[in-house]
Amino acid sequence: MMQIETIVCYRICRQFMHHVVRRRIQHVRLGSSLKIAMNFMYHRRYSSKVTGIVLGIETSCDDTGCAIVDSNGKILGEALNSQQQIHLNHGGIIPPIARDLHKQHIEHVVHDALRIASIELSDVDAIATTVKPGLPLSLVVGMNYGKHLSRTSGKPLIPVHHMEAHALTIRMVQKAARRLKLRNLPEFRTLSGGRAIELAASKSTDPQAFEFPMVMAQYRDCNFSMAGIKNCVRRHILQQEKLHGVEGDELIPDVFNLCAGIQMAVTRHLCQRLQRGMEFVTLQNLLPRDNKTLVLSGGVACNTFIKRAMGLVCQHMGYSLAVPPPHLCTDNGIMIAWNGIERLCADIGITHDLDSVDIDSKCPLGEDWTDKVAKASIKCKWIKLTPLLKEHSTSQE
Image (cartoon, rainbow, N blue to C red; front, top):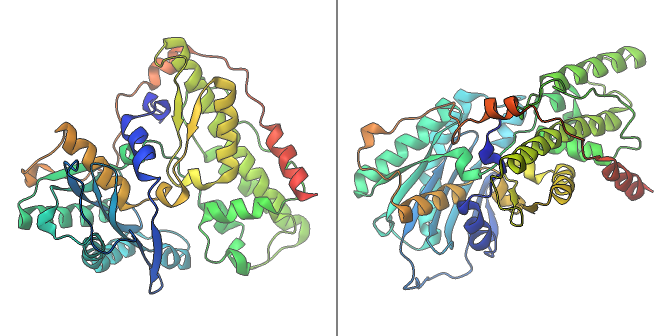
């Protein structure tokens, strides 16, 4: 479901981009999966202008993240435990395994973030934790630990909406990469499905070798659906396997071109729904005509091709495009802590009543305008994305 908020530049994102993403942080790898981002200063002297410090916890899916951020947007400390390789070995995210790994690592992730920030739990002003939406088994771990910290420290709890923290998130389809058996190639073994498809697509010699129909063309709304694309991918794979006699772990010969087709089909679908949303905003005069910004965040913002396509749409529609750097686009504790800072400063959604806080696996963000957009029945002249394919062809020469 697409809502009008997905094309509005939130104040949280403007400040997030202005303050947080400009911070210089250094990544230090501890062990096989723990990454810690730390400020170069060992001892911190906090500015007199600092009005709040929030500890944020993120466990909505498969990463255990914690960060401490102040109201000036300074990242005081961050720690992240990634489960990616473990889930890749299982062919996808297994909720009970994700839950157990969150439980195993959340305490030391939080302690590491505090240690890097050179502060104690008593120094923070509030605890922020993701409570919706996400995997229920994962969400409950972060929520319960957040409540534990709030209860033991006497600090208020700030429940955070994961999508609000991202501001805009679009999840890539993961199953196609598994069906394509890309993990059988050494260079793809440690990559997530979306990243694997992007890398494979970059090796394509003919991105238009496979045809993909336009998805949901008959519906004049902004809803997303990848079902049609996934079915088309499956048909192409089966046809290619039969054509070339592919068996077992063998890959189809034209796998890179197929990945490029998948990427283009997904990108075209996203851009068309986005364009209709932008045209609806213009029709309803919802944003100033000379100051319109699209914030693209979440895992999909790490995909260079999609990012360039969104930039093309923004250019034609008179929008500026704001994208956090890749390490702040994926799930992390920083975005939760900053959302907590925003709410702390605005005195919104802060509570000491821990029993009133619960998880919600499915939760919309803001007011649902789906019916209004559909009723407007906007017919669009689609912005052509072919320049992106020409750029790809040039880069391959």
